[in-house]
Image 1: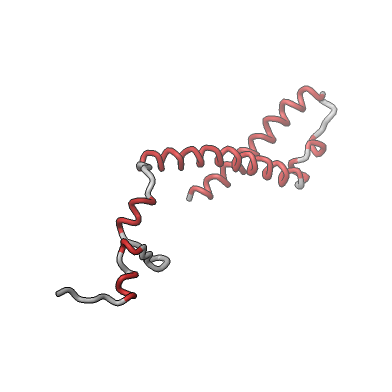
Image 2 (image 1 turned 90 degrees about the vertical axis):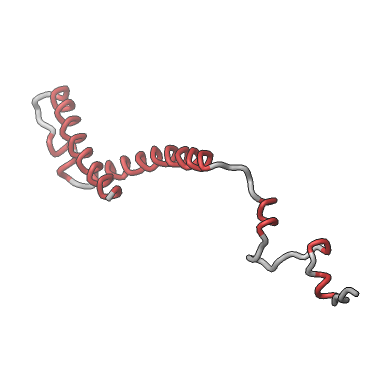
Length: 114
């Protein structure tokens, strides 16, 4: 003689369609929802996202350093303009400005990696 089950016990059986409360699931239920992504897929996707964003972030930082340098008289071309000739000045200015720009940007990048 088998035991008679209550309606509550019958509702909790899998054939009846019992679903565990939110946050509590059975391993078999999870298998249906899983996708077939491997660790290689995940790592490749993370690398793709990183490569996309690092270029954008570098451009943003590059421009931010330019904007900050423009606020200071020591990095304004007008401060150093001399009558020696514009061609000579432009070459010297380009070298001077970008050397210091590179130093500032390098310091920022180094600080982020540490």
